Image (tube, rainbow, N blue to C red; front, side, top):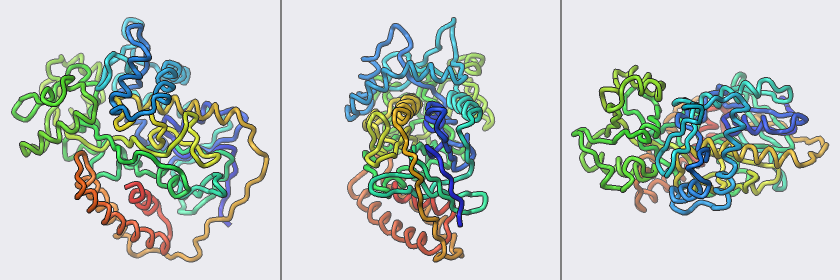
Length: 482
């Protein structure tokens, strides 16, 4: 008999959305927080820029709303955008209450500007905002007796009956045993699916797990075609997935060709501060036109002390590869960065499946449209985590004891063909990068669709025949989201 856990609320994912929702839930609720890897190994931790909010009297909500809708090519949900923007100052205060200390200047927030923003409204902790938020939220979660943390547990599938969700089957990676987490409410906060691309700014955990599980469980999924490509990832053979923050461009850094020529003015009058989709396409176009492997981001006009003060993490990382950014431009390329689509939810983060919620990058509440504006991602996580928790807190949870069958592994065997998982994983990511990348065509999309359907069948057959593993779970989810 496999292990069964019973909780009031199951939260799958321990990024800023998952942790904040746990902290905002009532202390009377028993909460399970599960992380597929180390708790701090996720996109939230690596977020450099900051959190956008109207915190200055020179700014206003209408401007933030208009900028967000414009960046999303007017495909966003204005009601959801307005809710997020108006709740943003409160979200910043909630983070401060959890211990986050934002960078100050003369007793006020030091606010930066980034692509798509018409005002300085990005509150930050130097260039390691995500790290500060994550460590403080995690410390707060560890101090609460009603929250139990499970590290190295990867969810397989949701437990559903009659359009209701009651938890999930979860693989304990330490012993490769499947355990049942049974809960009255389930929150998916697993992040995006950018690992489905060969080149990505995301950590290895971003394999679309929550979206794929929700899809198999009957959830409505929306706008998956809108993958955002971040314009500036560090181009170096040993610099795996390292992002060069948009805040550099907010402080005047210029994109240049290897010849030293600037080019962004040809594509948008806002130049380097155009929204990410425009900048990424511009870089992609210049690289393909001229045959360059990368372009460069130049902030060498700033003195070394200023750079070390404002961008210590980026400065240190580049220096480790022999790049002195106070003297030399930074080699950069676009990479898959953010999944704008996901599990369709309302502004309370509730899906079309009863008792099932989704928050953060895994969700599609409608705030990003076709393209996310910089530093609205951490904001979305915090605002809708609070909304989700508030919605659950207002409900009376049933005392009914839920019963589900144990995971049945009696008809599968140990695989001697694990090379298939490795090979198919690589093939999916190459197909997505080459055929479903920054610029797409109907022919390439059709070719990708045909081959991905074949891979889906191969993975499904492998899944039915062999013992489950974390790599197989991720591959299954990866090809589903692709």
